[in-house]
Image (cartoon, helix red, strand yellow):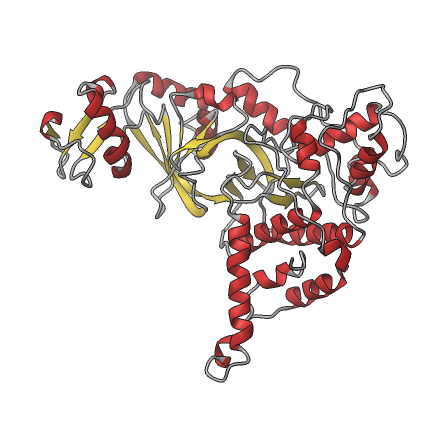
Length: 472
């Protein structure tokens, strides 16, 4: 197994050795052989993961200022009942923290987090909690002290709380850990909580490595106002003056149809949009429906158009799905429309965008990876009002009134707003909270393997007379 922090070096461009790499090389050399030999486990929380961010400042061992140490901060509170409306869900998400997931200093903070976790690795990592361990509030258990040690190592529990039965302090430490890992902060040691605790420090460092590599290859102009969608967390943030002022649950791409990472500009808001069905969906899903039910298009308020937007008789179309469609399927605007009442235009090479949905019940789910690549936004009308705040005419009330007319309307932005869709499975916010999420698309290891191969190539090129110039 390669050194977890030295892996950061492999991710760098071998031909552009910098001070950062020199520091990380030293970090890698410092890592002990015993720590690096630990066996990696894959006990990540399962797909039904609550991916909410949190406010509890929980940084890694030995590097956190006392004021930011989560062991001395109130534990996150679990909601008494699931949020039932778009407004209450977004308000609850915003109340958790106003710290942005992504800002100009995120990359540097990820490096700091990697240093902290490398220190834990040098000291042997954290203990494994038995999968069948039993914990109950107020009851002395055989593994209580083991759990305390695990939480102390990541500063989820104060160091002076190293022994004792499962009391409220320990439950609060579990809540902090759960919140940092996208789990509902209940304080109960669920199987998914134990699985997340048993992910090795080496794997957590690799998540930090992969997240850092992605950010260092992202060119994004933040601006005073910007929007970020972190795909693994399934949340969108509206950031203004370096503070999150809106946060929304989002539904992003399925594992087989992942949402892309990108940077773009939001150029306009469309009310009561029509939906032009992507040709890939028309070829597979629409064609399959039409073969089973020739009335499907009419029932779904869809029409078939030629290259000049002229209507075509659906019965004259080849719905075998064997060929790429030479027609366009478009769904009329209305309550039945797949895009819902709002679409946010953000031109990009992937032809994806942010929008409403006519299946808003899906936002209540913890597992929100169910789209074809676009990002469905909970309480999207609120986001639209924030985007259009420079245009007083378009208040939230005005937006609601216009939607109620049922008329299609495109509103250009007075000032474009930058937007970034990012893929961070590990990051640290300004309050020193280190966050982790599941690698839902299994992209972390693929990225690290690719960058390791690239580093090896340029390392070998440097010693070969025909390719030495490539490593300069």
